[in-house]
Image (cartoon, rainbow, N blue to C red; front, side):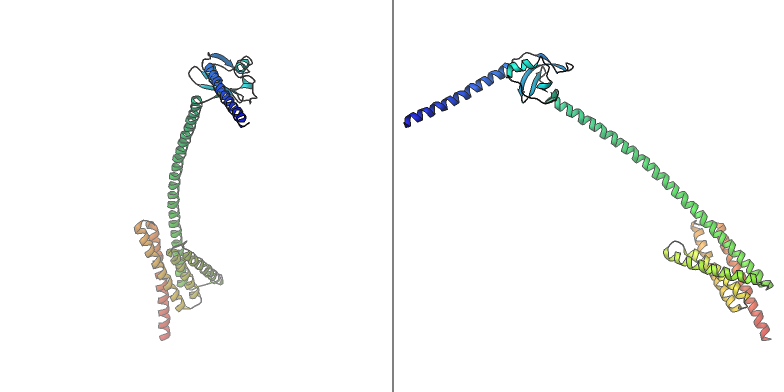
Length: 310
């Protein structure tokens, strides 16, 4: 019994090996037959796309064709022409379900397509780089123009500052001349006194604002000295009309000191070219006007003291 089972097992194993050998023989025969296939014309279902090739393989619904130059093309069986399907059927039997894709390139053809796509991408990158370079050049031009405009704006601002300084010194000289006239005739109306007091209050408010701006760094010491000189001049006028000569002398001495500091500051700026010469002349003239007013007040005080001593 054991010998019978053993012999039967060996017979079955031999049959399996034989079947494998026969399958390999048939496969090799089919591959050799396909390799010997002649070139023929193939077309898709529309008949518009054609090529000359030999049948190379058929797997999972895809037919592979080999062209004369060795290039492999692939097409799904459903897209293959009606005259070409029986040809494939003769070699592979039943047709399998395929998808809807048309001919496809494989191997070298696919590589060529990718290389063409890469070249197109490189051209696009180069065009984008050139566009970026052009935009950068335009931006540089705009920045240059902006720098020129900023310099022009700075020059305009300096000219405006010079004009404002000149205007201030003109007003300061006018105030000094007006005070000098008041000192000469000693005639003051109530309207004149009220006007002077209003001007003093305005000058005090301006001086506080300038001090705050100086601490914030938005104005210079010159602006502060200008405001101080104007305030001293106006306060000296009020002290004079009220008959307080000592206070008047104190205020005018302060105005003289402030005007001198302004003139010195302007002289330094004029030497480095940040202000023009007319501004310096006006600053020096304002200083002389303040000194003239202060000297006349001192003269009046001396005359009064002389009369009292007699």
